[in-house]
Image 1 (cartoon, rainbow, N blue to C red):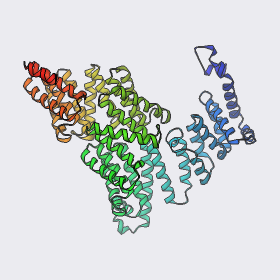
Image 2: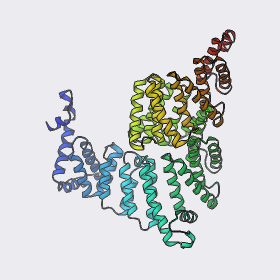
Image 3: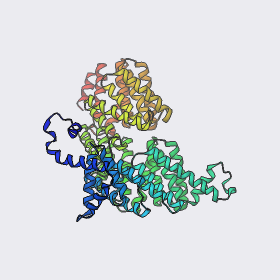
Image 4: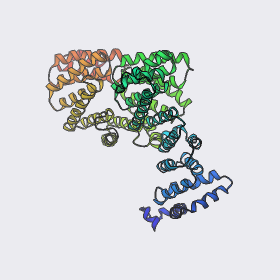
Length: 584
């Protein structure tokens, strides 16, 4: 009855096929929790078998499965691990790695109190594959690494181990925790440098800038620390701070190692990614192509560093509206990654995800949805539902569903992502704002214009404060707000917004950029609603001419601009020309 109470099911026969296993789990867990001395007997029995490690893995598997429905199981698992961590921790890691038992938090807690020396900690860590350190055994890996860092022989070795920890935290998406660890390590290094450096060289103990300069000149470890801090800030979208740090480290590395040294190229690559995020696309592309040329001269054809640079170049081309070139590059990178890394590697998933996003922009929504779902499944299994990579895919899948008219499903997904991002990142974080923007876009499509306007105005205000009036993301929100205002009949304000956005896009992105084309197309529609046919015709002819000159004939935007122009011409009685353009 106790077990049945823990498994309330509609059908009474549910427990029948599972009862033997459940009974074994339940009674093993409860007896071990109640009588810790049994751990001696359990371990002795396991050691007496032909394969002690396999037996221990099975025992951990039983307790791990029981932990999901029997509270005593977690206590029992901690009991046997605490009894002899050097024997049971490797078995527990195998249970997670090979069987998928979800006990990461239990193992992390046990690892923090385990009495293991530095060698034993290192050997235990080696049993956790790199991919599992990010996913199913993330907390356990961090706990073991922290214990090992505290046992380091000197401060330099300790700092190096903490830098490795921040690398892992960054990969796990725990950016704030990574920043805290880095700032603590930075403070220790700057304090120790001041204690061992001539004060006259540092100018003032109160100033960190001289200390920073001195350490950058003398310590490659400090260069690594500052570079990692810049990356963590970049991942939090604190782009101005991150750019300053990247440029400081880049100058030091190029002076000491040379412009094309691998470590200097790594910083230039990250700087290009940051400039991409800041909307400075021309500068970003120049840097990224220079990095790629240097890598191709130094490394093998499909070296992982080259594939990463090609992937980021494809992403940049996507943002610049050069979609055909971007798609070709994404597909080439994806093929190489699948061969080298496997289909479910994080880098492979990132390329497939970005290719799906590009296909969505090009109107190939069925392909895009299928590809996003193929990315989402392994991400949820390995990263969890709230990992930044998973949230990004869920967000973009919601966008495709909205475009396909599956609005309820899309709205549920957007709201779930918005809630998770708000909790983890804050209301005005760029990722949260992006989801709020796209939710407003969906509400507009559903005809809920008042809700959409409120949300767009809130996002526009936040983006203007954090990014500036003419940042591409801000312009995108201003453009969509103009569309809502047009739908609500507030035509004068809508036209002013459309024209302001169009001027900024022409200056920043160029006349032929997809965003510029879309804004001009929507301005044509608004001018038509207002009966301003002559102005509408001028803009419609420009939009159609630029679309046909720069896009493939089957691109949906070509047809959209053609339809707008013919509608404008018909409205002015220019029927023959309209028919000619419609049939062209």
